[in-house]
Image 1: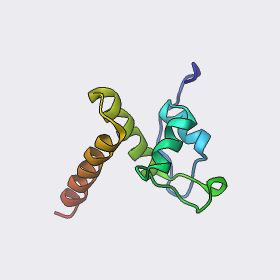
Image 2: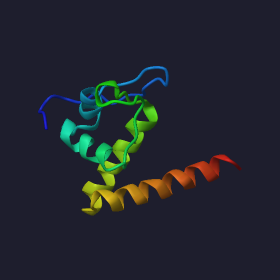
Image 3: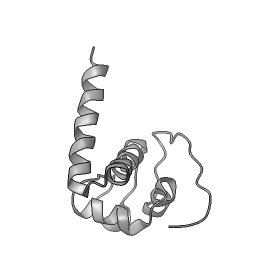
Length: 96
């Protein structure tokens, strides 16, 4: 991880991030993200590894995964399950 300060902000849906930009925004290295992508725990826009781009929803999910793993010392699969459940709760509440 880098000692550079990380700016926190809102990503506009029309804009996307590269893997390195997403890693910087999350405060992790690109390998951490690549492992979750390869395991299917995190999605992206684009087909090939060179074409991967990330929207605001991917940034939010990556940050949630990181928080669950770090705060609860959870393995990546468990963290992804918790994030899936949280996203479902948000979706259901938005449907009211």
